Amino acid sequence: EAQAAPAGSPAAVLWLAALLAQAQPRPAALQLSETERRAAEAVPASSPLYLHLRYHLLRLQIEGGQAAAADAEVSRLLAHPPQPMDTATRNRWLALKLVTAPTLEAFLAAAPRQMAETGAGTPIAREDAASATGAATPPAAPVMGLDEDFPRRLYRALPLSLLKTLPTRPDLPAAVKTGLIEAVWTRAVLLGDWATADTWAPTLAQGRGTTAHLYTRFVQATTPEAKRLAATVIFVNTPELHPHRVDPQGNDTEWGCQGWGTGAQDALALTPPAFLSPAQQAEARREQALLDALPNRNAYLAPTLLAWAQGKPADPEAPKALHFFVASTRNECRPPVPANGQPAPEPTYSRDAFRLLHKLWPDSDWARTTRYHYGGR
Image 1 (cartoon, rainbow, N blue to C red):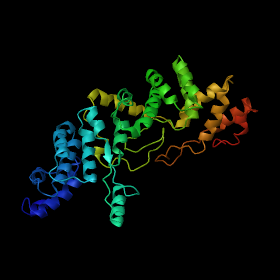
Image 2: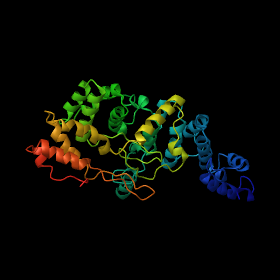
Image 3: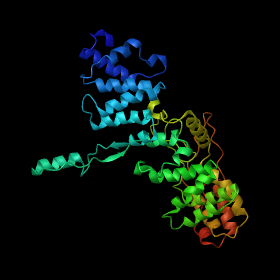
Image 4: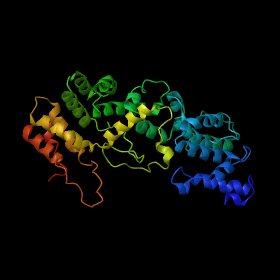
């Protein structure tokens, strides 16, 4: 239908705008024809829809596996757009740059986005106040933040060998630093990378007054089994630690739980950045497969925790850990019901931990405050 009007006419450009927005690199039914592509490429830079059409042409090129080839034009149009870009448009173009970035530095530089806020103290509110009073208000610095595409790509596409180098970089967006350190340590433990976990344990311990000594115990552990036990005790005391997993559909998830959110809206959302080498992409896929296969957090921790506690160690952390473990099972996520409609058997680890605590440490404060278990009746 774009060809029903003369090439370059307003009617043809409008049809191209809708057509390109819906186009996909696959399946064939959603692909642009060569005629449609040439028509879009022929729209002059003076057209109000030029940036829209170029965005989708480049998006299709990136989704088709040619992110590196698209980078020069993405960079050119960000630096010298033929028309001024509003905040939302520039942010969409930065999302393309996040994929086409040829270096880690360019990837991190494309992450911060200007926020279009409308609350008190924002540019819109200041303009309203100035209109009411007649006073001139100096322009304020833009409010910067992150869109969901950056952490999604960070945690899904980058391997641990690269993630662990980021927290010390001055160009890392500050908004993700704390969560990234937690993710690096947690992933290192789950993947058995004890050297990386030892490196970041002291940093993670900072400011954790009641659990800092647990990280010292972790670093001092000398075998994988001892490391795993020390990490288990940390995990049950620190429920906010998780690997920041992003599932294959692009949803944020808890540890071993079903994802939530809108997920990836198009192939661009999960396309790895161009700067990653094939070896790094393969490494990230291997790690993600291991993270995707994890059971939920409590099912993972229970065997190590219960086996240790059954020996009644002379360690005040044991009854405390059982108490926190039982409490964590109250609102834990459960695996989705499979297609055959038969849910998995209810786990018994909450009941087992509860009974063990009351059997071996019946007079402890931890047993007295643990009045119920959850599931496994």
